[in-house]
Image (tube, rainbow, N blue to C red; front, side):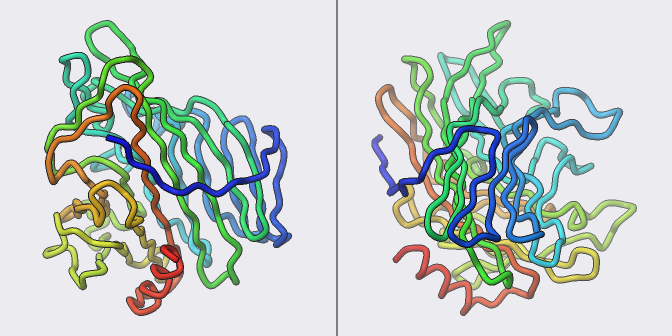
Length: 318
């Protein structure tokens, strides 16, 4: 399977410095632990290079790197979740296969507690800028844990690019490119979830101590949580209230993606969803092939406005 998307050329910088776009308020900065993108005094997102640990008693199997959290709204609320008490393996924005096969063995890169696989930060490739954006490019390893072997199965490249806005909302893209690290294919079995995922704010997690913690969903088809699960949709908006202020994050699936518009898994209770092309049948990454995909994220401190989101969708695909 060869699946290609467009890429934007960027000016590369050595790691450890700050890159600015022509909009002086937009910056990307790298430290030994993370890469952050800021707009003025506000942080847009943080990519975790270093190992992130949860609460003191959590099993170390849940420690992880190579994902984005937190994502902030323009009002400063955290729209993503990490180390939730119900599903601590879900983490902010991440991409992972669930039911896969490698060298005849089952590998699960998503459910860390199964101890069959994981994803992890490998290295920073570049930091860059263009006229109205800043970006960073990182490498992420998808690692199989089979028997006593630890094998890097997939080399993934993320190009994360954030664009200058007028603070009413934030917008950034993630462009993913996955290729094999060995000569053996990775097979994705038909399954109801996996792929590019988003875990929403921990304030949206309904637990005994927080029974009202929840969120709502809206898709480009006009569906909600109950009727949107496993539909094929151009965008999904997860929205709710954080610290008494409206917060929403919309994820758009580029029409050039494999099986676009991809099916989505919207969980019936938890604040998470994922674009899951494996819902429509098995597929694989073969030697010499690259699996590429692109998603756009809109983050705002307001209730969802489908007409405005549609206008942003048109800007995304134009």
